[in-house]
Length: 138
Image (cartoon, rainbow, N blue to C red; front, top):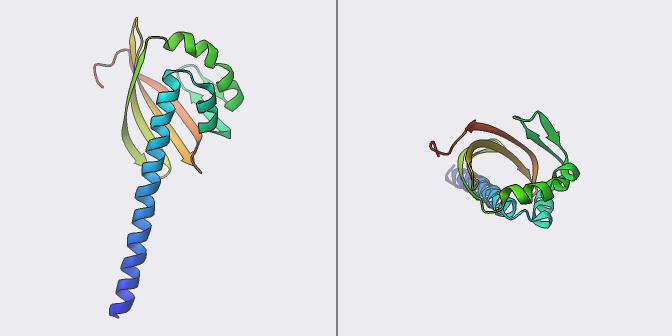
């Protein structure tokens, strides 16, 4: 019985370690996302997105695929010039990580709640919704 318990404990520890490692990888991908978004790096953003990604912009009622999102980066580049983006992980449930992000533009700021589903080191789904017209709650 002692050997069985050690085997079960080892398997449980290995599974826990793999879950923690996966979360760390997802968090690193999300950090890369915001870094690339801040400088409108089309190549990095494209690398981070799965080919079949769905990006939902709740406030605008828009769902974009990868090509549509990448095509909008030139417009975003003008909007993000001189801005800062701060983010923090709020929670992770299953494969979905929820982030609170402050977009601090030169003329205004906006607090957003964003979600990311990550699989195979790519963002497979994302949603974005405003939660405040300033970052006071950040």
